[in-house]
Image 1: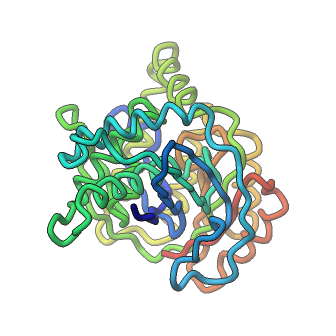
Image 2: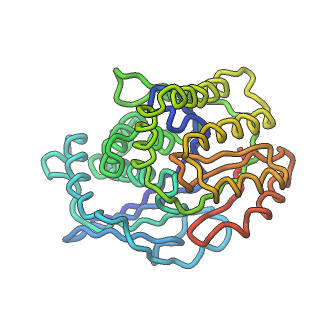
Image 3: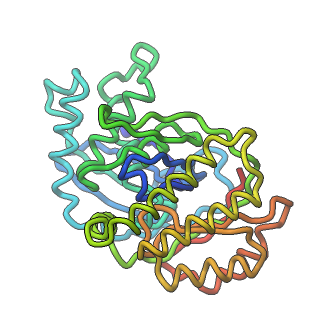
Length: 339
């Protein structure tokens, strides 16, 4: 039996977080980094997670620079329960695997270039890679059975239920479709409608700090706030939805300075929803002092991922990177992303 290696990107949610839960549109893009999964069939299931390269596995062709030394980190708590879920989803979704009950047991080695649990969609990227793994195992001849992106997305979405219960489909959509998308939600469809999105040239600084709360806690807090402070909360969610819709529908796409203003306006609403943290607020302020046009948290909040829109000229991100670097802890990340 053969080893299989697959890759899938993480994501950056640009606008619409939390408002998307209540039917407003959202938009995001896949990152230039994510996870790499190596599957080695064996007698039992095992799951190992590495930062840096997976030991003994060659780097992807064309990978720039010298890969960092591998470091094994503890897998997510309760991951043992994922294997039955994986087998059930693959058996239900892929006819050739129904008779065998899924994949042969084996070792899953995950190399991540993003901090886990920080809002960059690492679990969605893992589920996308596993969906592609199941399809490639079910139909080794990919030309005879080419999998559609929608098929991969549906399987990845079903797999991600283990990690997030009722995921929106945004994270797996961005990881599967691998291009900027606007997402529109309907109560009649399990997955949102994903429309290709044209973005202006953007110069971003992207980072993360450790999160203080989990996604489920933050979503539940907003839901509770809608009950106790309905008028204010609904107004803030509508504002977030309106910002996302404006960015999506403006033709031509807004220039970077308007993106910066929109990001800061959205951050103000997210802050008023108690979704930011003092540490994240400080980073965004320092980034703007260094020349960023605006910025906001990305994802559920409570710390975690964030981004700043920088001046579009070459090197416009450098002062922002230098200003923020001293405040990023070892568990976080900071990098430039040019679109």
